[in-house]
Length: 456
Image (tube, rainbow, N blue to C red):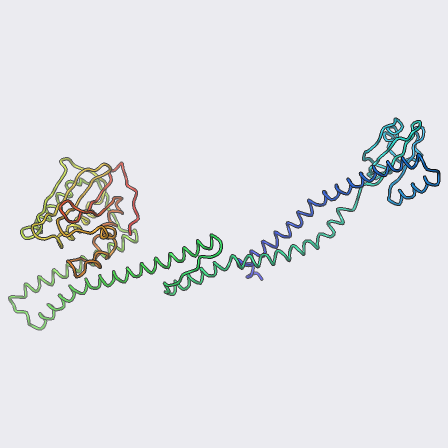
C-alpha cells in the first residue's frame, strides 16, 4: 500500500478522495447554520400567522372554541398567553412584552421564556390593555441531526473521489508511461521511436519533446558516423604511406639514394597525422569546456603581420599570391594570441589547399565598430550559399567536396569556430571580393564584450 501511494496514480487518488471528503465536511459546516436559520425563520413566520388567526378566533368564538384553539396550538408546541387589563394569565413572559401588549402594540421578538430561547409574537385585542401572546421555542437539535447524517455524505464523497481519482490518474499517467517507454527504447538504441501528440497540451508538449529528441539523436548519430568515416579515411591515407615506405625500407627495396626522400615523406605524413590528432584532442576539450586559455593584451596588427611573414614562405614561389593588409595603428584586444594564431593558420591551411597558384590570398586586420576584425580572403573556388550555412559543422564540407577538390579532415573550421567562441569573439564565412571564400574573425574590445554564441 505504501508503494502504491508513491506512484502518481496513488497520489492522485489520495488527493481527489481527500478533496471530496473535505468538500463534504466544509459544505456541511456551511449548511448547518443556513439550515438552522431557515428553520427558525419558518417557525417565526408560522407563529405570526398563528397569532393573527388566534386573535381572530378568540374575539369571535365561545369558551369551548377557545379551549380547542389552545389545545391545537399546544399540540404544535406553541404556548398561548392571554393578557387582560395589563396582567398576563400565567408567569414566564418578559415584563417588557406584557407591557407592549398592554400598551396596544404588536410584539415580534426573541427572548427567554421559562429559561428557553423562544420566539414571541403578540397581538393586542380589542378591549382595555388586553391581548394574546404566542411563544414557541427556537429550533434545537438541527445541527446535531445534520452532522449526525454527514457520514453518509462523507462515504459517498470518498467513493466518488476514489473513482474520479483512478480515472484521472489513468488519464494523466498514460502520456508519462508512453514517454518513459519511448525513453527506454531510445536508451536501447532505437532512434525510430515516436509518440503520438494526443491528450492535454502538457502531454502533447512532452510527446513533441521526446520526438524532437529522437530526431536530433538520429541526425547527430548520422553525422557522427559520417564524421568518423571521414576521420578514419584521413588517418588511413598517411598511415598507408608511412607503412608502405617502412616496408620498403625494411625489405631493402629503397635504394640508399632514395632513403632520404622516403624519410622526408614519412616525416611529412607523420606530421600530418600529428596535426589531425591534435585537432581532435583540442576539439574534444573545447566541447568539454576545459581548454586552458592564456588571455593577455594583444595587438592584432602585430599578430596578423607575424602570421603573414610565416605564410609568405609557404606561398612563394609556386603558390597563391599572399597579400597582407594592416591598419596603420595598433588594435588592442584581450585574447589568447596562441589560439588566435592557431585559427589564422587553420584558415590559411584550408586556403592553401584549394587556391591555385598566382591567385590571391589576403590576410587583413582593421578596426571594426565593436572590435578588431581579422579577415582571411582568397581567390579560390569559394563556397555556395548552402555551403556557408554549414561551413562550421564538423565534416560537412568534407562530405560535400570529397573526390571533387582537395579537402581536409573537416575539423579545421569547426575547431576555429569553437576557439573563437571560447574567446568571446565571432566568426563568419562569406564570399570574398577576390572571388573565393572569406572568413571574418571579430574580437571584442576590452570594454565591449560580445555575447558568446552557441555553435553547431
